[in-house]
Image (cartoon, rainbow, N blue to C red):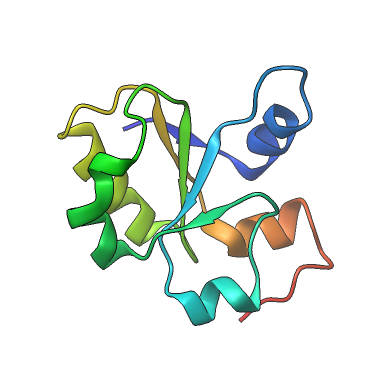
Length: 106
């Protein structure tokens, strides 16, 4: 499984290339508390039935709180034909620590 660090993702988001889809698989209350700007919220339990609505060819970075749920979903999507996908190492907690210290944490 491919991993991307918060620093690498931040560089990627600020490059001239089209941004990846940021698929945040946390629950809606977690997402409402904090999220990376531009993220799309699809809770983990909805991904299993709703993944067909996603573009399997689009570059996608899966995000959660610490990187555990997103790793599971990244593997699930890899097993369902997604080829350009990565897990955000450390999740939004690492993003807040390394990229955006103004982001609320929990």
